Structures are given as C-alpha cells and as structure tokens.
Amino acid sequence: MNEQNRLEKLRNLGVRLHELQLVQPMPGKSYTSVALNYLFSRHELTRPCGQPLDVTLRSLAEAIVQKHKLQFSRFDTDSIIDYFCRLYRVH
Image (cartoon, rainbow, N blue to C red; front, side, top):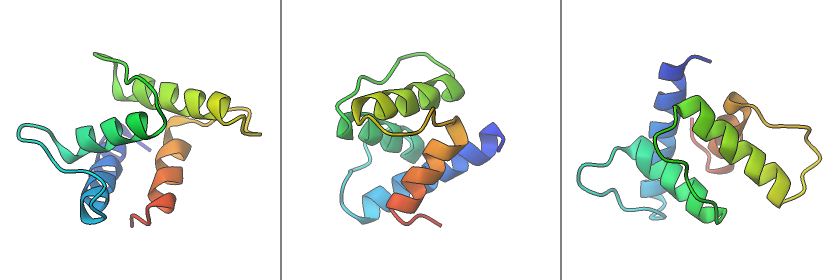
C-alpha cells in the first residue's frame, strides 16, 4: 500500500473514531492526526515527533507487539492499519 492509501485509511479511521465518540477533532488537526494520537494514547505510548508516517506506524506496531506480548514476529505498517480498521469496522 502506498503512503496516500495509508493516509486515506487513517483518515477514515479518524472519522470512525469520531462517529463512535471516542475522539473529538481539534481545530487545525486532521482526522489522520487525531487517529494516530488516539492509537498511541490508547496503548499508553508516546507518539514519535517529526517522523515519517512509515516510521511512526512501525514504532506503533512494534510497541504493541512488545507490550501485549503478541505472537507475531512483527506487524508491518500496512497490517497495523488493517488491524485497527477491522477493529473499529472502518471500510
């Protein structure tokens, strides 16, 4: 999946989180940013600042695998997005 598709899926996830009243969009923040902030805070992780999207998603995936001691050798950037989209039923 290319970066444009990742951003679109994250935006859709942010919209869905808003629909579920789990987040409130803030002025000047995109739904993508709101979604990332929510995912990092939900898992009690610090979101890395100034990193490319790929690095940010990879760090989220690795932290979740380690924190929850999951059996996956690793999540990649696309699979972590797909995981959360399925979890919150984003189409």
